[in-house]
Length: 179
Ligand code: PRP
Ligand code: MN
Ligand code: MG
Image 1 (cartoon, rainbow, N blue to C red):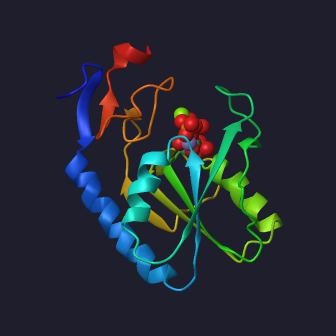
Image 2 (image 1 turned 60 degrees about the vertical axis):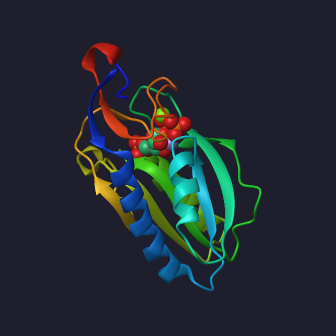
Image 3 (image 1 turned 30 degrees about the vertical axis):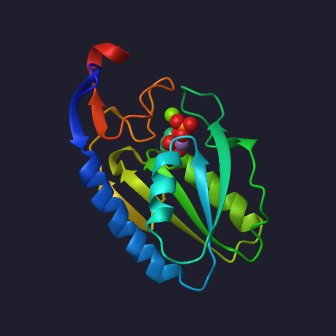
């Protein structure tokens, strides 16, 4: 059943499953024997991270980080505020940062700077969706699920005002809902 606020489904539950499975096998091969620390950027990445890590057959550890941009709603300096830090030390660890979507690139840009400063052994980014048109900083993911058009997408972790994260598919929100 399609949620009444959704205009169209962009990626179905089945399609997402296939994409995640593919990324999982690539990551398994890349991280076999490295015991990576897989970092979920809360909250949007939570669905993707739990499915992705179940598609990874190598040993790994999980941790969570919650950040928010300063001056929400405006074009900010690109600094992020840490709302919840990792429990694990990243020094000498191989990090896999998991995101649901990359938009301006500011969130990940700041996280990468932080983890470099904290002396991670390596840092790679996996994102389910990449909205390249919106990028304002030079940032590229190492693993990309799909390139997404510049539309208001929600579901599978992605929200509008904290709503729609639980939809099993990714869809485009109707204009009248956010205007
Ligand atoms: C969204 C999304 C990414 C970030 C991408 O998170 O989940 O984390 O924005 O935007 P950027 O590339 O422009 O930095 P949000 O800050 O909305 O928090 P949420 O994950 O809790 O929804
Ligand atoms: Mn997020
Ligand atoms: Mg959000």
